[in-house]
Each structure stands twice: as C-alpha cells, then as structure tokens.
Length: 152
Image (cartoon, helix red, strand yellow):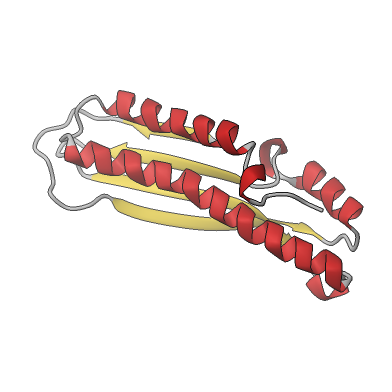
C-alpha cells in the first residue's frame, strides 16, 4: 500500500464531502491450474503482491479535498479455460481480494473526510495515521488471508 499526501496552506473549511475518484486496473493471468495462477500472480502482481491499492489525498488552500484511489487486481483472460473447481476457488479468492483492497481504499476516503472535518489542520499527520491503518489491516488479516484471500 502506497500513500501520498499533498498539502497547501489551508484556510476555511469547505462543508462538502471530499471528492473521491476510483480507478481500477488489472494485470493479466491465464493459468489453468492453481500452481500456474499462483506463479503468474507472484511474477506479474504489482509490487510483489496479488493486488495493490494506492490512495492519494490532495487538499487546497481553501480545504478542498480530493482523494484518488487506484486499485490493481489480477484478471483472468480466459476464465472458461479453468477447470470448474479451480475457477470456483479463483472466483472466491478474487472477490475476497477485491473486498480487502476496498478496505485500503476506504482508509484514503477516511483520511480525506478527516481532513474536511478538521479544516485541513495537521494534514500530514492525518495522512500518516491512515497510512498506518493500511499496515495494521494487512498485519491483522495477513494481507487478507483471514478474509478469504487464499488460493488454492
């Protein structure tokens, strides 16, 4: 999980919620067996992970807050080529993986909302707090393993 924050001197608070933009990207896998898929995710996955979430919070002098969240997930290019049991496990893992990554994205949203609520005071500390929560989440769930991010 990579987190970035940008700060400018903030003035009065904008009462609106932060602007949230989400982007989904993927990398291709095409394995038919669990071993092939695991190998491909290890080789092709972002930053050494099966999936990755990056959030970036910006705020302006008048405390207009935006957060951009980028998710990168594995995508099977031919899911029909997998045997039924492998596909069922893949689908379960991929759904759990997406849910886990969304929790990381929520941390970016939480950081942005906290900035709005505090009129952008101590912005870097707010960003650091929520970046730490990403680490806590991964440690507590073993990068999603306890939430079903297991394969095979």
